[in-house]
Amino acid sequence: MGVAYSEDLRRCIVKAYEESKASSRKLAKRFEVGKTFVNELIQRYKETGSLSAKPHGGGEKPQLNTEDLKWLKAKVIEKNDSTLKELCQELESRGIKVSQSTMCRALKKIGLTRKKKLFMPTNSREKKCKA
Image (tube, rainbow, N blue to C red; front, top):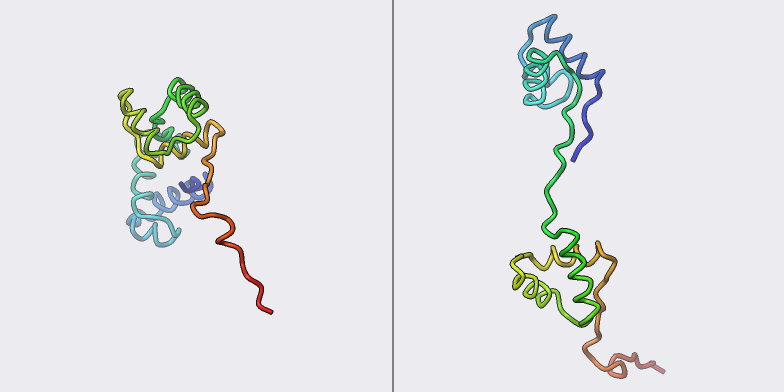
């Protein structure tokens, strides 16, 4: 997500529009902003008289609430060798379907990480010295 344009830039765009009645396309090119931004700014200024940026929308609601995260933490403590897929399936049995990516983010959120296992014996991985 980008940063909102400054109030000063917004004021300059509206002032240029009022003085010259130039098209939004020309104003967008002149101030190096998007045409849609100019259209919406001028529209909002006409309707409300405000040049300030709109407040942030708040983002997307998390799929797992605090109760679900507590359950997840207890489940992982109980059985710490569960895979992401198994945890997703157990959560689905509780009526909440999430992807493995979401499960991984949830585990990070509650401070748990997955352990990586070596699938080959350590002695077969040793490097041999050339003499």
